[in-house]
Image (cartoon, rainbow, N blue to C red; front, side, top):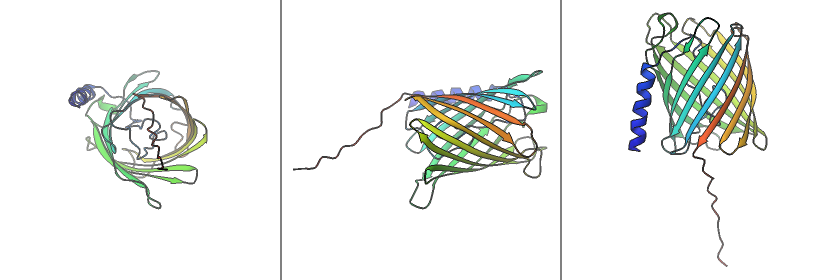
Length: 260
């Protein structure tokens, strides 16, 4: 545990000195299978379990690529530490976007009627090119997850405040569903609605559809596409990610024996 705390401080130090680029902020992302594309679930990695997700995103009009690395580490049965490091590639300029670190904690388990609930806290250290950065931001919000029939439904409500006072606060609402379609295959759907740092009302609404495939016990592959309904910026988006879970642990099977 002491070595992990030292590692966390080293990681945080790296994030603070990293450079960010791009106002199409990626923000903190979940790792599979504890989320959809950008929608978080209340699920967390078991204690001591580490996940690394490498994602490739291709957007059309404006056209750019984004390569991101998302990390998550289970602290205990209900908490995990997260980080996302995105790198944007464009025709003229390329570089790191805002880097985010966060902590997710589940404080209520799912019941027969009520969903499970978790809180997410996140911060992006001040960094980046002057014209395309919020000079850092902080925020967080509430996560709810509930199984409804064959669907696992997740709802997120987040608020972010930029350090640059000339920018507006951001609101982000997400709704995601996860349905098991076959052995090791899940169908994913998501709606992302956002009020950006430049607008006084919601100015972004994107729908996403795809699937998650688990070819190996420790590997998840996710493929999806998104379409922005409101401003068509970007018009179409394609997502591809690979998530490795380490170390993989077989679930414990408890057997009950009846006395003769």
